[in-house]
Length: 247
Length: 228
Image (cartoon, chains in turn cyan, purple):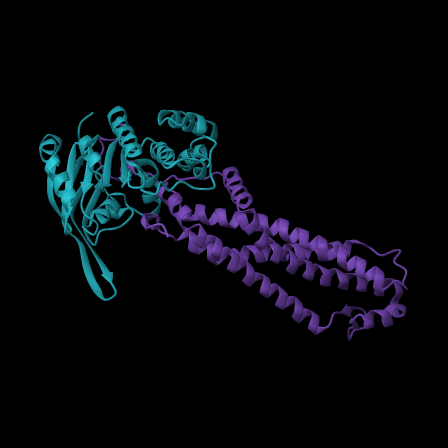
């Protein structure tokens, strides 16, 4: 598999209007993400990290600039194509898990496959297999409320993988989990990235995420502050953590 | 994975997102079942309004049948019940007050349904947003809400129409006890009850239309907002 860029962000700016004041949240961001990469976006709240993240996921449109997913400019897509993109190309994982509360784990995982037109039996088989893969084989009939946070996030990961997406977007996936459960989820994401070649892009505060990332993008004041590769990271991470803890 | 990578461009983006009718129906039923008490409240206002409509409509039908069977002989009892022979002299009409009451009760019922459905949409903002993130189209969300309303309409107004029919039969038997009911045809009564039923289904769909469109137009980004 050639390492083409699966996500390309070109000169993206975003301006929100708060009351009558225009606030520029992103001031021109350029970024390329290679297929199969594990990328973390780090930055304090208000840095524009979430906005950038939402743009890549097709959840928000840039004021100017372009976002390409698999070389397709997603600002040019109509509602049907965007829905298809969300269904097939991108899997979302959220801080608050965002499972559908009235559905069982299995129903949550099969829903994207049903939307994709997969036959019910096949969807159920694949859903069971995915839940096995994330270590929830036995609990497929449980409702989200009957599962722990870590288990819910596992269901969300299985759901994100349902249609074999090219990209998984994880927004603070460990934000609502205790430290050890968070580590399990990170390990699971890393395993998926390694075994399935899924590109993982994750917005995070969690320093544990950095160890598994191929690259880390630091966002500050609506711009990319710096991009670090994994080998550079291992050196600087101790000092970052210290700085963070003393702050 | 890399099947499509050699051909960059819009060719890879397709537009096929589906939700089969059978699956839509089971999702709608499931959603009603799980929010049973909320569904019950919505349904109940419909049951009452349609029971009232059915009661009035079938009551008139009974009166017309009795007038057909007994002619002038039935008139004193019928006019004491509020019916009047119309100008042409071959039909009965209910008073204007009654029509007014019916219109009012249907209006109240519709407002009740819109209100209950708006609440239900608001409660489900996140759920709708999640479905949108998973690829749901506007029309899939719209269809789910319409199906739920259709089920509520069919069941609720069916029950209401039956309730109204039996109540008006019982009331007629009591009120017109002096008259002979043999020869009374049930067909016009059932037709009126059917009319009440259809009205209820129509109202239920009408009432959900605005909330459902509101739900369908929600942007998937709402799931990124903080939990309230």
